[in-house]
Amino acid sequence: MLYEKEKDAYYKGEVTDELVTAVQNELGVVLPDAYLQLMRERNGFALKKKYFPTSVPNSWANNSVCVDHLLGLGAEPGLLDNDYLRREWGIRSKKVIILSAEPPLFICLDYRRKKQPAVVFIDVDEKKEILLAPDFASFIDGLQDEIEERPETEDTLSQEQISEFYLKIDQMIEKGKPGEIDRLFTKVLSTNHELIRYMVRKMKVHALSKVHFNLLLFLVCCSQGDNKGIIEDGELREMLDEFSLSKNRDVRDMALYSLNEMKKRV
Image (cartoon, rainbow, N blue to C red; front, side):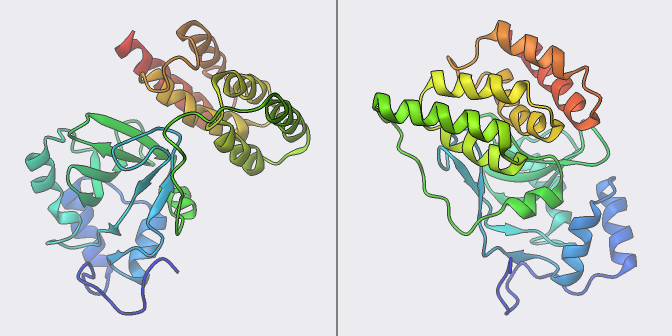
């Protein structure tokens, strides 16, 4: 369950078709079906599952972000506070819809690239933006009760441990499902650059586009200048160029977005 049985201060009352239409007209977007379905169950609430994993260190933690609540269809607090929050905190685009606000940290629906919005984390003070999930449903599925922060400094691995990781990577790439591969990749991200590069190259040549998309969630951060020293820009550009020709639309779109982000930086 995402929320407590008792309603809290974020609850904005029952959702009607008229309310949905009014809020969407005010915001100028069509809200995701998964969001609207959830709001019809409980229109705004503090979350029980408050944590979403990320490979990008940020002001909250080095491997997760905190999502305290979800704003409902309404105001004070609610989605209709978006104009005020954007003006107050310098978020310029009206195509960024704030779902959860703990200024200067925000969880948002991002309509800037396509009609079906991704979910992003924005830290205004740090001028950092992290892609969390390709859509709202995936974001909700990825929320967790607790995520233990990994140590700030890279652990020194023994040669035996390094060899075990190489073996696990090879076995997982050969036989693992995309979700299992992604979970191993999350663990590998806390090891060393050589192991990370090895798994990135293995995921790149995997047959399944879902594995490519999960890899791109990491590569988009590299394209924005994070994870420095892991993937050199030349190799990064080659991978993104190849993924931009993918037959899978989500992979292609993510690769093109990453290339655009890289152009802004390089």
